[in-house]
Structure formats: structure tokens, C-alpha cells
Length: 289
Image: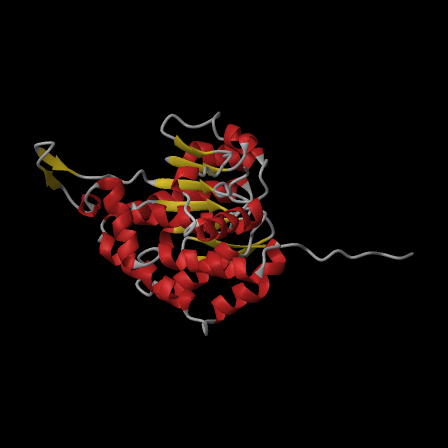
């Protein structure tokens, strides 16, 4: 009689500063993860925002280096994994490098909060006539989109720069890039300012037991995805759990013929073709008409 032996499957993920390998992701594991993530919040709040930005800037410099092994691995493996061209993968990686630049990180905070110092301390606001401070939510769960790999890192970075602990549900479309990002982050975060407050969870969407834990234990859930994904996180949340939705989008391009001239028509056509072809129509920003 022939006997077929199936090798045990395992899952590699990132848990608050450490890469771990387990047979599976279980609700009890996720419950314990959130408890530990909540414990990490206070230490993160005491870290100056400039120090967090400096770590992320170093990550960007590593990813921009053509000789860095992680960049090389991304450019070698991701095109086949995600079915994007090598040029598209390189452009996406360069977009992440741009996001991670120190000046851009601080500028983004300034646009959102008026003054990045609100994250660190009370600041006098003359329009308000008093002192203001921005308070982190606590533990933020991110449900990343399945269409473009840049969005997972982008939402994670926003959570870091607002001094939240972050738990990212990785997309089944891309279970690799977030872990590679964590590898470089771990390399750059020698003082352990950020990595002990980050977790990257690979589990299949629709696991109601795990999703129930997230909806009860997170202080904020940031959801990227289609209608079905968004609706999952609209119900069953704890009383303290807020949700920020980035649901399905339909983008279009508008041309004003009065703005076209003989001199700029070619350039406008080239830029429009580029917009339509970027991410092969998979991104929410991709014009469909």
C-alpha cells in the first residue's frame, strides 16, 4: 500500500520585533499579540517623532541602494510573484523610498496636523488660544489592499509616524514584501524604537474567529479593500474600536481641451498613457475612463 506523507506547513510572520514561524495563526495567538501590543504603546509615545522618522529614513536609504540584498531580492522575485513588470516593481519601490525620506515624513505630518510637534508635546496654538497635543489611538490594525504592494507599507508608516503600535494583516496577494520591509527595518532600528511595536500577520481573509479578535482588540482599524472586506469590519467591533475605510474607488481622467495647445499635446498624451498603464489598472488611482 502506498502512503503519501504531507510535509507540515508553517507560517513565518513578524511579531513585535521578531520573526517567528508557527504551524498556523490562531485566534489565541492574535489575542496574546494584541495584549502585548497594547503594552508597547506607552514606550512608543515617549519616543521623539524625529527619532522615528530618522529610523524610517535609514530604511529608505537602504532600499534605494542598488547593492542592498533586499532591494536586489525584491527586483528579482517580485515581478513573477505579483505579475507586474520589473519596471513597475522598481517604480513602486522608488515610491516607497520617497515616502520614507525624513523631510517627506515630517511634511506629511505638518499637512495633517499643522505642526508635527503636536505628536511630541503640548504646543501653543494662537488660533485656538490654548495648548494642543495629538494623542495616538493606541493599537492600530491595518487590513492592506490586495492590488498594489506599496499601500501596505504606506499605511504602516502612517501608523508609525503617529506613534501607534501597528498590526498589519498582510494581503494574500503579497505575503512577501512586508516581511522584507520588516527585515530592513530591523536592520536599521538598532535601538528597537519601532520594531517592538509592529506585527505582520499572514492569515486568510474570512477567518471570522481571528477577525473577531481584531475587531474587539484594536483601537482603530484601517481597512483597504473592496465592498465585502469593508463590510466585514463595519460590524462586531468593540465599543472603543473605530474604523477608517478606504473602500472601492473608480478613477477617471478629465481633459480640458481649452488647456491643450500644439506645444503640450504630446506631453499630455504621454502622461495620460502613463497614468492609464501604471499598476496595470490595478490601483485605485488608475483611471478607468
